[in-house]
Amino acid sequence: MPVMNGDRQKIEIFKPFGEAFELTKKILFQPFDLTKWLVIGFAAFLSGHFAGVGLNFPSPFGNFQSHRANENVISPYLEQWKPWLQVAIVFLVLLVFVFIAVIAWFKARGNFIFTDCIVRNRAAIVEPWREYRKEGNSYFLFLLAIMFGAVLLLALMLVAFISLGWLKQRTGEMPPITSIGSIVFLFVFWVLIIIFVSVVTYFMVPVMYRRRCRAVEAFRDVTRLILHSLGVFILFCLFGIVLVLAALIIGAIVTCATCCLAALPYIGTVILLPLFVCLRGFGLLFLRQFGPDYDVWASFMPTEFLPVLLQTPGPQDLPSLPSDERNE
Image (cartoon, rainbow, N blue to C red; front, top):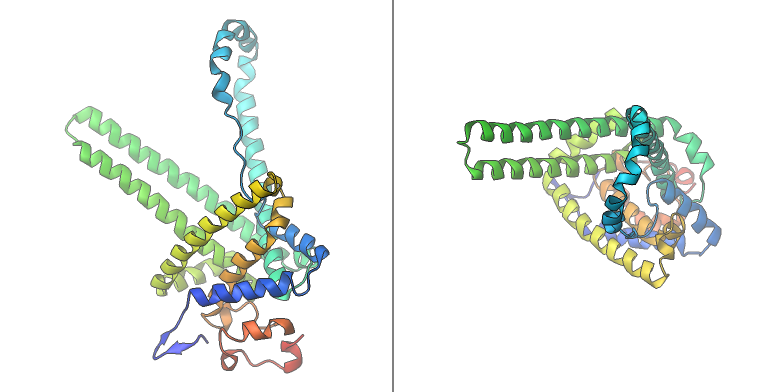
């Protein structure tokens, strides 16, 4: 169980980050192994860390006037394709959906691979890909349902916004403050939903990894945990925002220093791998404070991690395992 302070759990924010920094050094630098970096970097790439920082491409609207000048020349050709326009739009939408689904599937499976690389301090792709196939697929289907739900919720919010505009135009009695308040409320509501779902899905992976359970069970458990310790998770989110901003600044600096090399997919992931490992390790070590059921190292602890991981929770709180299994 977590360290106790009286009758309440003592959950810390900054200590897990310091431990994650030490864990990153042991995984990537003690000793340094380029092959290990490349493999773990590929696992991080699969989990969604595609590059260091995005690139700003020139806007296609710069030559808008020249396109309008040739409108009379192009329009006769467009008339010939009008019957196929709807088919092309539907095909394009389906193509985009398939692309997003494939990316989400790789990301769902990659999250378990990247977590396994950190937990077991190993550079492996194929073995965790097969071992956590069921959990990864369940997590993917859950993310797919979340995306559909988000689109549906956004559509309902747009309908409500349009209805308010129609009501104002029809009656002409709705004060401006009401419209502004409704827009602000819908925006804040949408942001809070995004933050809550993001935090829950972020911690679902270690819970599923630890218990080998399905996504729905992990979602219920993490939701209960967040609602029970809401203040702690709010502090975690605030500190997480600071870390994300710091990561973006570091990514931008490294991208400039490497002449945009760090912005390339996978290459940027490998270059910034210590950053990604530290951030993921921070989440795992923070969640670990809530007890053995949330401790991804509860049934397996690499010997080299003992000086770091035996601090949170204390050795007396670890599940009783044979010494040879704990040091396996």
